[in-house]
Image (tube, rainbow, N blue to C red; front, side, top):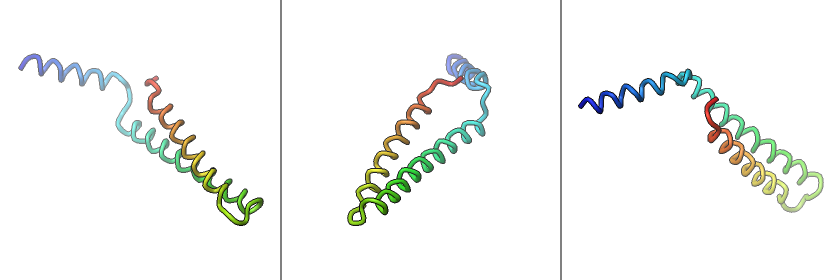
Length: 86
């Protein structure tokens, strides 16, 4: 029992020592989601613009823009989430 209590106390100290509240973490992850939506939206819009300008038959640029921007957004999110706490 004493080991469990000391482990719980140690975990609490580690969490409280980080200096971040739950709200700050929630805001961080909400911002990441908004950033992802913005990147994919801009890539899709650029593809739509290029399709209207250069390719009236098939939506190739829209597909390419959406795919590339999704890959870019996932890369950025993985990079931000895996970054160590400052």
